Length: 286
Image (cartoon, rainbow, N blue to C red; front, side):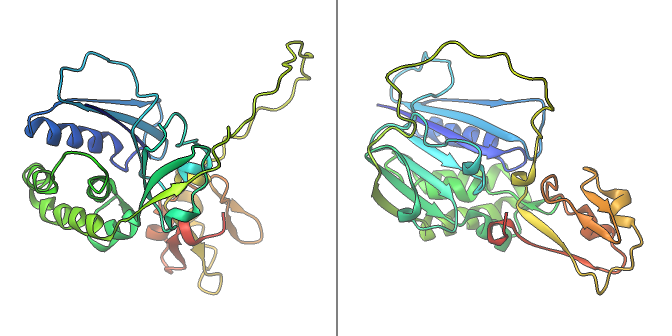
């Protein structure tokens, strides 16, 4: 038996910790386990991948997981920029933090098990916040254990309760809530390649004209979207002064550049008139 798990998330959501916790649960139950992260120089908000392998025999493979049995998607918007279905085995499992139903997922495999849970909502409800942002790793592990994986939720709860100290009780509650609320369904896909390979591949390419680089828009990094109430705003420029991303512009009045706003919500804190509020990005028009 070899179970390979790939975690997709963003820096600060706990993807790396989730893969370590899963490996620790497996190890405490007598299995061999392995955990490793992969990320770039950017941290909070940037895409992060982490991997876990679980086996009843010693694990010698030390590479990334390219053909996982299970994929865990911690960020509901990361599927817009990352193909989380890539390499997933037929009949594999996708565990997604989403408000969608399993039937709304589109993929090229013939069939996959979809486990859907609103982990962000559960994290907010249980006050699992760091710097005002939801940390969804523990509820996602609770949902993951609804998959066909030989690990027990009681063992996970025990490890998390001991490891997280004062925060342990909230995390254990979130784990159990996600486990109970997750929707599990076997869903049929198209069974076709997402990008059909052409018979003829041209190898002669013209020299491109020098032009501007690709804009690194970061709007999909955020969980929350700030909103300005212009009836309360007195244009004091406090938000503009403190925005770490320079995502607030000065025109006739201050405006938020949603292409580059990462949702740090500093503006909502420094506004003296409380003119800036926020909403869940999954409900906003991006």
